[in-house]
Length: 228
Ligand code: B1M
Image (cartoon, rainbow, N blue to C red):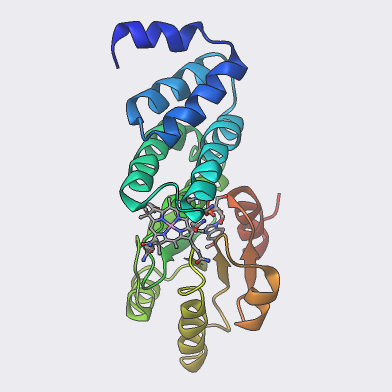
């Protein structure tokens, strides 16, 4: 961003800046979203408020126009890049653990066929902040990836994310496999993602359904018996 644009962003009131950041996110302007996030943090905004009011709300608007055929995949990829530029600044704040000892390992990954990772990444940050060691398997994970990670990391919780109605049933496939192998008895499984709900989580036999990142971190603490 040029100095001139920088000065204009800094001159905006908080409300105008948040509106501008939503526009910038929509336009896929990573540097501007990064700068806007910096300014709000400097003005004393807490990371969760920046996240929900500027970034998540901006991405919600993108989602509506994506659904309505106004935005297409290449543009939405730019929007995702801009959102991530803001999230990178929030990561160290959100992931800063107030716990001196770890609550255990939390393995998380987006399921097979699905490449959405923004929500999963947010959940991971909040979990780190809650005191978990997070092992992130990334996107597009077949059941074997989850099994290998369970073997390797002996997690306290397994988490799966899905953003598509076509990929969410795969969570059930993973849970069935964990059941067959007798793993599910000792390993709580949390599922989450925009198209899910509690009924779906119950139907596939998940231990827990995380509606959003903050709720998921609280649920995770409860699952390991450390709700404090
Ligand atoms: Co996609 N996409 N997308 N997309 N995309 C959606 C999901 C969609 C709802 C858009 C729409 O039509 N309105 C729609 C799904 C429709 C449906 O299934 N019913 C859709 C579609 C159709 C597609 C493609 C098929 C488009 C195409 O190719 N024609 C394609 C599929 C690719 C694939 O995965 N195979 C596709 C591609 C993409 C991009 C690559 C361009 C990009 C992803 C970039 C990335 O993630 N790196 C993208 C994006 C950005 C979106 C929207 C616009 C935004 C998603 C997002 O990041 N939200 C999305 C619209 C929407 O959701 N409104 C859309 C912000 C994020 C903070 O929220 O992810 O919901 P969310 O996470 C929340 C909670 O859900 C929860 O906590 C998070 C934080 O609070 N949560 C968990 C998530 N995971 C959790 C796990 C937990 C607990 C809680 O425990 C383990």
